[in-house]
Length: 298
Image (spheres, rainbow, N blue to C red):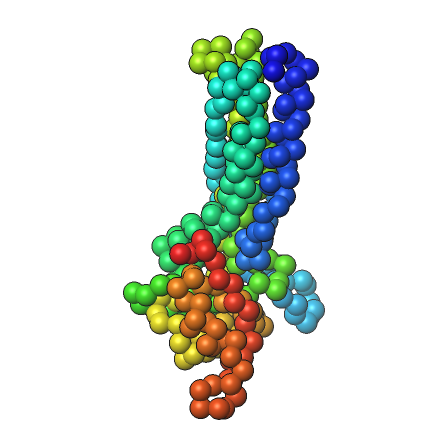
């Protein structure tokens, strides 16, 4: 192929279509557990995480929640992925063999939020701070009950593969994916302006994005490193459904999703997917929650 503007435009149109199609074909699960929040600056502050919303009887003046007391900040991060294609390969009409590489780049870009949420934020919740200054999964979350501060736990200690029980049916999910700049395909193929073409005789194709994953309400998540048993599942579910806000009123949380690594699939199925137990009695936990078996937790 003769390297000129017209031919490069046609080539890049095909590569961009490959990227766009590959990006859109990826099945994603992170939006099930994370609220996607558009970002417009380098750091976002989530002051509203300090309290659950709740109605109360209107007697006297409105009760205004001070949403600025417990602010949670989340800084955007910059990410990239780059491949180089020898200019000679384009000249020799070998560009077709590079289309799969563009497709793989698109898949990686689409899956990147999955990695931030499932690989980093979810298991990292045992050691990462949330809005109240405690670890997201912690035994000592401070809650005011009848004017006194008490400690509330949303975790089970242990040394086994972690599993997570989540409430995902509310507008704000347990985790946050902060979207600053969506991935796009960037192409450098002009010898007059691209150093890689002029100095190394290579065309450069890359992606760039900005974003971050973090934590919303700890009350909507329960993390466990104990054995995944019916008793531990029931204890986690009861703990979440028993939570109260700073006003002493129940939060009304009902967990609906059990997130597990592949190694716990059999145990999860035995707890939630089997209608009858081995002794023939009804399974009290049958379909109490949906199972999300994530390969990112392997």
